[in-house]
Length: 522
View 1 (tube, rainbow, N blue to C red):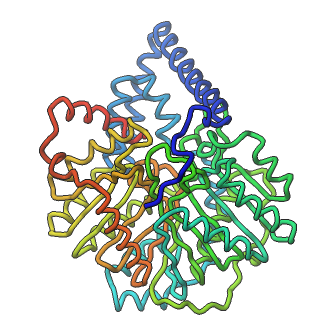
View 2 (spheres, one colour):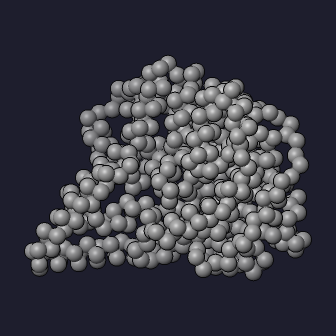
View 3 (cartoon, helix red, strand yellow):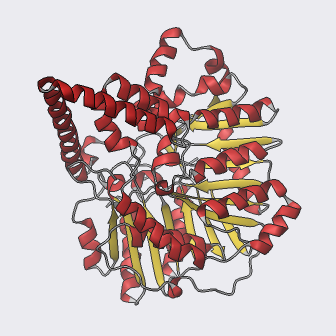
């Protein structure tokens, strides 16, 4: 494992200029929230009838939460908070717990999905083939198609990258070959060396007449770029948009972020995985030890789904943008003959539709596993349903393993992650911590047959709040490569199963129990 000769520590001077805007915005949200809470408490103390009204409202909200078709792990912390502190609880639930339920935003996504998703090919013949050869896989692909709209494909080559640096180098080579269009959508872009090498290519492509679009999440990039970053891209001829700008005030959509990572080139080649476009992902900076991340490259029919996923976000985020009128140019059929067999399902998860596609896919893979199922995730903050699914698989005799970081990037979240170890370990799930550093990869694999790679962490934010994307692939060489990487990861990791199955003290258990109450907010 190579190590860079420089940029091995993240110095204070390297904190990016966008942090100031984030701090101001966060303070504004906090101040606004406190003012609302203070105002309601003052009114409550002044007019006693308001106390009765708040009690009634709290009960109604609690009953509404209880009646929701959501996991108890999501509902109970909110119910407890609102009943204990009605004013603060209601305000916090309004800001965070509603999960972006703004009708205008929801309608925009529903409208664009009604146009785009029907443009994807039908998969009925492939689905029949899978049902005959691998019925357990057919159940998963059927679910993804029915509840997210994304079909299963053949005729697609998949290249697996066990390191983000390999992925980005392949990505830059592909970008240089672009002839018609380039789409890039990332949670975080850092205005530094890693991005500059890509931007140079994009600027050359613009001069050649290639249409280039860049889309990034404001919260994810807020510590990495200036507010004029998007303007500078546009000045170079790059069409750029920002997802959900983080601004002072009470923003009901604030809790939902674009966590997707997608590059599409001419509708023929696509890239996705765990890595953003920032120096730490490619070992130019290592604030948390060796940064482990992965990705995949798709060539062939399945790239069409990645294209649709990008176009969904591009056209839905703002009502006053000039959006696409037709999509024919971007969704053409190309002649391609894949060198490998196998099945591929690129899919997306949208928090606006109330369907937890990412979580359901992970649980379905664990449920179907007969020999082994392995996961790697930077954060482990899961529901009781997910805990039960993984535990039951282990009790059935399946080799269930989860890899988490050995060096955390967020200490509180790391403590919360470790709070889930005991419940899993005592039921036979094996827990590993990646000792070289921080593992940011989000993957699963089962039985040498099926695997996933994408942006979906095993945490509440990814599974319930964020816009995510993943790719399921089966019966192909990329599954073998994924397993080989997992086996190398285990060699470099420390198994902590036994310690957490029986080695936690009473005080630690209590503190972690309290911390777990905040899990849905993490």
